[in-house]
Length: 103
Ligand SMILES: [Fe+2]
Image (cartoon, rainbow, N blue to C red; front, side, top):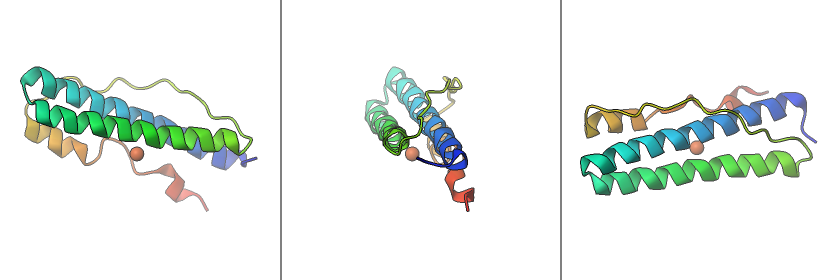
């Protein structure tokens, strides 16, 4: 079983990975409706990768005998000015992992 501190940090990271997945999905949708289908496919793949990250952490927490929590996801932006703006945002849709701050 994980300590409460580790469990809480991993659950927060689960939420961040989920948010990142939603963010990429929203950007992919904008690209699709704008006719940028190749960019949309790239972003859909990123959305799936972030969900995979979330699920790895989620399963790890439960496999360790702790409790993985499903959290509400903040609504991501839906409208963008350009593909260039999206590429700028791709670099940091979420904060760096909280897990780096753990002792
Ligand atoms: Fe991730």
